[in-house]
Image (cartoon, rainbow, N blue to C red; front, side, top):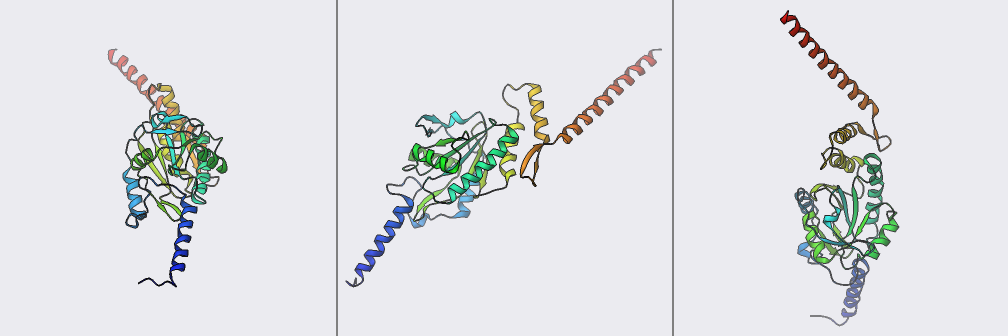
Length: 283
């Protein structure tokens, strides 16, 4: 039975819990897998496995909205590799830290591979609160508003469908959301190519997959000369761990040029000897 002397204390505790949840997770409804059901509590190992299982998935042409309120879709982001990071704007620590680190590594990747060689996007998965204005403010706070990033919002249905294709799980919790810290590398055809995890990660974990997609694969209607230049760039772009940066290794290029010259000289010598042998046989 309830005792009247305990009721005020229980009521006070309930109010405190309700206020704590509202301050961290935000007021309003939750969508899709944003569940408070304890049976659906976040399990890291299962989330990681689901994330890995998503590699190879082709993303649907989901409708999106950018930070200016303009409509676009996933198809608008195809044609180049895409780095897609999922965040929620009311996150106090992890999402800002993750975004700032990603911005630094993206700058290094662009310096190595070309400024316009791939796209980058932030997608707010808290559909009821991550509005275009909230995304613009969040990006500005992290210093990425002028870096050529797409800042994206979407409806709850789109978030649910896209997160499943990406293998990204999230659940509302008293602290905001429980979710795996994930950025996804998507190829030019919209296929999940690689997953990145953690608030910080080593630079090559992002740059090497992008290097493969940008330079290691032939492009539609690419000329033979352009493909050859990409191959040289691919093999001669190296990582210097001391500087945590990529650079074009001219020694590799020179070595390749010398090797090609030796092979060409050998072929010319063989052709000359073959022709000389034929002339000798005729006489």
